Image 1 (cartoon, helix red, strand yellow):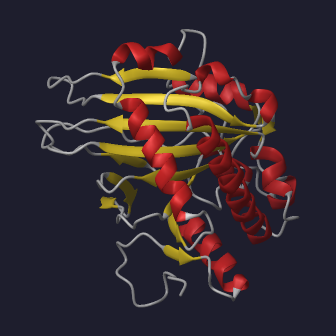
Image 2 (cartoon, rainbow, N blue to C red):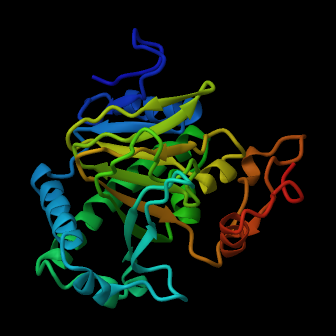
Length: 305
């Protein structure tokens, strides 16, 4: 069954879409509708083998359970976006919790630098390469549906935002003060599309209708976030979801996010087919320039209408 927003479902429930539904036109419409109204949805029966997801989560957890010295063998360097690092350390005054992260490119092969991939566990590379193959097929199908939802060729979105895939593993250890501490601050993703897995500890929240809504934990579901670049190329038709994370007092929360993103030199802006008599809502700009402005919290009001 495909869960659509016009069915008898509470308005605060993030859309859940069953990809095994034989009516693929209905599935496509549900994906488009969720992207327009929410900017986030959950996919079940998506075709990625449960055993593979379990192995992915197992090797990720085992990496973060290594000693600090072993994890630092793939430490992030100052001039790199890849590698292991502690993003935040517990700070009660700033209401910040501890968050450790591991980043590395997973596709295309020309962008992969295995020096940032953990050697321990030994099967880390094998598992992550197979997961990349599976998640790439899923993301391309989503982008085809979104392209057709805009009345474009099915390859249109992928040609702009599907240039690179970056894996981001987040590790939130137990926090003694979950009532005052959060994980990651509220943000929209800088990429085009984010495909997310979590362990069994809930903690993801999305913002809609002036309220924060908990994302229901569904075992082995893939959470899909529409991100900034698809917002921009769709000229605002698809939403880039604002989201944040919480922490747990007793248990470790982990998430695996694959960021589907343009190459640094790709020019990203609204498709010309979507522009009518009114000016576009967003100005075209090179992706690396967009990253520069966003990570430094520079305004876009001088660029966008």
